[in-house]
Length: 240
Image (cartoon, rainbow, N blue to C red; front, top):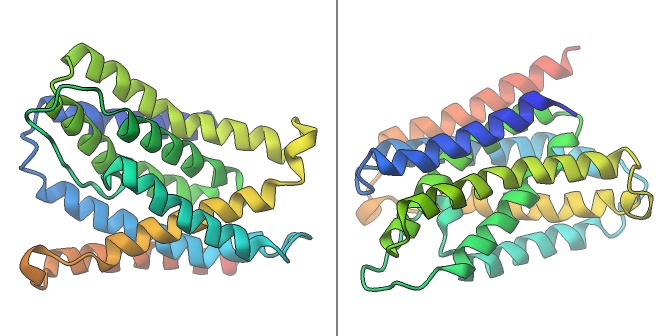
């Protein structure tokens, strides 16, 4: 188990979340570019590494069903999270109730995102997830503040969110090393669910239109840069 992964995931989520106390929520063009970069990077890593790896296991005949299930699960989660995974910010100025659906679905999403980090090619993937959590945490903090949650409570909830991916990583590490014997055989299927979630999130980010459907040079560069970095890592590993 890598403490570097745990620290990086936690710090990036906290930086993105606590930035909401410093920057105005409407001034998020830079975060959108980070989101585009991370979406492209996650998509490339999923196609180049996670999919081939999961199909090298001895339990491949049902993995496709779990990938499809993960894709559908993310659609269902977004009915409660309102697309915060994509950096979307929807606040309700007159709403004072706690957004339980948003918080719980986003925490589950983050927990599942941390699970594939025990895979062979986790070094590249951890950077993509860490960067992806910056705009997601910023959006979560904005929604919580927009629902008139106290700043102290928002800070505590952001810490909870930041802990979810590291917890998913540690749980997956226990599974993959056979520490939880009764679940170890289901590891490829769990990875299938996570791959489906990654495919949904990354493709949604990549295919979302810019404002008024205008072509964005900066967004295109961010997408190409994310994919290029993933390809460089892929060819470097293939050369060894």
